[in-house]
Length: 398
Ligand SMILES: Nc1nc2c(c(=O)[nH]1)N[C@H]1C(S)=C(S)[C@@H](COP(=O)(O)O)O[C@H]1N2
Ligand SMILES: [Mo]
Image (cartoon, rainbow, N blue to C red; front, side):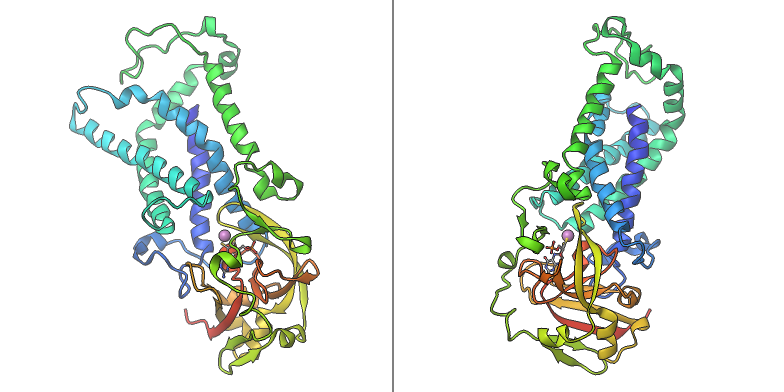
């Protein structure tokens, strides 16, 4: 049962994770932090802007489902613990290959869960970069999982068929009997009396999963439920008034000052005919308002109402035809890794893609990217560059 739940659940976590990699558009200049990916990028596709909520759903699912599966994974590992101490460790070549694949399976699962959870808790204790490590770890784990499923699926089906789930759920501890001896020796030869019924185990694991889900889903669902997300990283900053929604990184934390975002700020719009625009110049252009989510790779998301200038209008102004213009947005920020992000021509062309100046009817706060920030429908949060100082448009050449 635990194995089947993991088989279905981890498949969804893996697919949504690989989707997230595609959403990062690593084929665009400056976006790729995995230049060694080689064939692993075989499935990359142009990430769409419709529907605007898609990344919110896929990434929310990736993170929340991953957290929900933690108790199931731990219980599954617990259920096979005797195998870890099996002696002699290797009996045949086939069995040695099998055990080696288990090192990658168990190690891979442990690595993916540990790095994922440390990352969403913003606790970067590992001495390597999360993004490539989590991607390569995923493929190692998936390869080991494929081998494991191929070798064990018939036995898993036989095991599930061997007993009736409903009857098992009605069986009390007093009537619980050990498994019959199996050819792999997972069942003890002379078992002690049971201390837990099978339904007790399922209830314990299911309860743990329900708790994980209940304490984290609020950060994706947002609204009043956000306060129930007690497992979401603590100490997160919020703004005030119309800017009262989650701040990923504060201006102060990244060394962006009120002085450089003040009256002297100019936006450099680079293209065939570069221009420099003040905030007043931008506010004098046609402004458009859309409700669009910010959906962070860490699983939290929130929808707000943004007002600003269309990226397509700015491309036109720079002399690059919008349908063919990709853009790289550069931030004022000088520290950290998110100083720039590239967007595809398809993203620039969407009329809802904005250089936002206002949110919920008020000026952007400094922490939310004042004087101007990018907002693109369905883009991962990290591509919505804050404190933009330059938009470099170029004809998309791929
Ligand atoms: N310049 C800059 N822009 C940035 C970031 C950043 O660290 N620096 N963080 C990004 C990430 S990861 C997210 S999820 C969103 C969050 O936007 P918010 O802080 O306004 O909620 O901003 C994005 N834009
Ligand atoms: Mo993010």
